[in-house]
Length: 411
Image 1: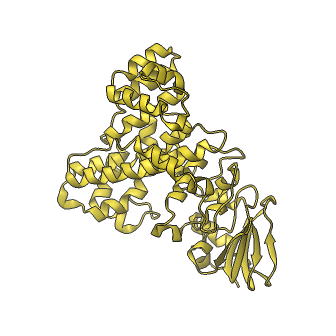
Image 2: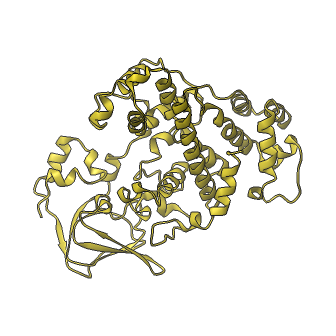
Image 3: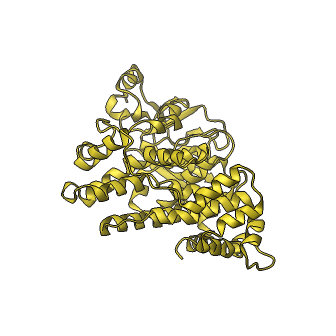
């Protein structure tokens, strides 16, 4: 099989290369053919090449009796069979297969880098569907964003004061005084400190002891997380409902992040919780903007279609305005960058990417997404065992803990 532009434009992330790069890529390139039973690569081996399946069927063996198949011309075949630092599965040819093999460095070409979070939303960007960028609401929002005229929500007062204070090495008494400015937040902090999530040996009944048990960093992240609910509110009934739905989605993602971080080393559970809550924070200024825009110029479908293209850059912009640290600022840009590779160690972005992909299991979107074991973040988990349906065991088995975490944000 000869490789042409039409084939490349179906493959992720190769399709994001420029037209000139794609033209150069296809010159004299052909698919490789392998017979049934051929082993393409083995689990644990270093990855030097990325394999795309163009013909036939491949069996992916995850070990412990867990396998799944990928067939050409399916949604899963548009993604690499495996990528990262090491192969997480052994790949066998079930039938005669045709493979496009490319250097692993191609992955870094198609992945969004944090620096691009500072770019504008361009209504002429051809990567955004024409139906979205041609809408009046999107065009007006892009212009307002570019001219820095957006209504940016303020970080709730208690969260802002606490984050500022902890940066200046304040003592625990001042932290407690700030938290107690909001009795509802203080009560939630005591509640969570007494919860099974922190395996308390004795009950506590005051904010001071809660902060002692949790520590300053965890207190800061938890208080910020509790306060974020205030920005997910609107006046228009539809906008308020859309903000509420987004908050519910964010709660689920943050709970997955919390549990996954708790099962692995290197990422704070409370920071992971907050990262999940801010992954989609960029939709808030957009919905605020729509609320003030003439109602006859937008429809609910137009808003739903635009949000995926807005939440990344606007989210990073908003978190920078709130003076969040860089590893949190980049989260909105990276939350769905499945092939982002943060390095050898498990990073905050890996936790969010894995949790986001896991959150789509059981939804219509899952058919269009890569297998969870095939992305770089998966290989960094302490226990990267996967079920035949691509569910991370650690999250599947921790449903009760996830539900318990979610309750703190619903009450």
